[in-house]
Length: 398
Image (tube, rainbow, N blue to C red; front, side, top):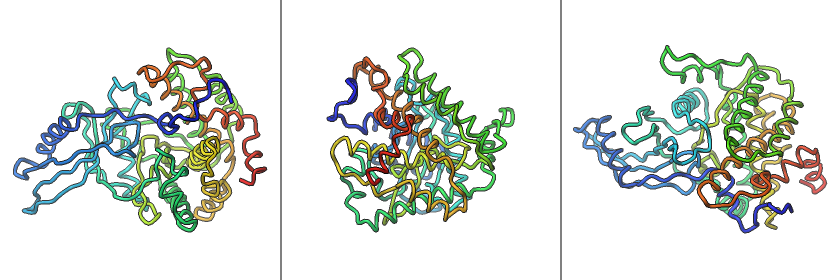
């Protein structure tokens, strides 16, 4: 193990993804109540009750559960809401921008045009005046979410389920991708979210190959932003060089990719999706971008389980099973999947690198001598780039 590799006592999931900034709930409730009064009217007698921050919230923004009530058409109704706010600049954001307008447009389009169960978006508020930041309000979906802390494969309702239940969870999760990727004219979503007519419409790639090139260039820009003013990561830069030089020739039209396509972003009921969450990474691209992310994020947790000497869930979300089901559901032949899984590992590496820089900036950790040790899955990414990661799993019967 490298000298600067993380201590095995570390809570891996806390450094594996962004940590929330927290709003003062009392002040937030009062300010949200004033805003709500302006929306539904004082005659509706709106009231804001309990507010809470879920432990399983998305970590790149503030997510707050809000209980509210108001009168409509003479009937008093209770509403269980989710409030998502863009991160404040003083929180040293994980991403350079957080486009809530695009998220709202994507969620509405997916809900209206596919069978993917996306929570209803009630309103997007672009003004920062009510709460100090832009925000969106959506319905709350009840159910079970595979936890990140501790990871679902370490000991959770997922790992304690029966093999048949886990298979149902896996197959229904892959079906979400099949349903999403079937959406016609996904580029319309981006154009609809561009805003007023005077705002230039986004450039829409002509095909999936162009979308992939644009996405890869965007990740390069993200890394440059994330590393600005700090040490650079030789491993991340090597991964970019390798992946850019071996980028596959992708044919066909692009699809709308969820982006953060992992089971930890799904609310399940009876081991089937009831709500698909966290659309901030949505983009046009090849189908394999979502498949690669789904497979890699499970492998990420599996590798942590192996490091900790825990059994994990190696039979779950295996490449061959995910590919076979996706191809059955869509008729699409999955290609170049190892490249896309490695690309997912690179993307996660940049996110983790930024998170660690923020942790260091807040005085919660010291700058390591080796910048690559800021990447939790360093060993796995190195092995993928060296071409030995998947052969080793095959030899181990995984």
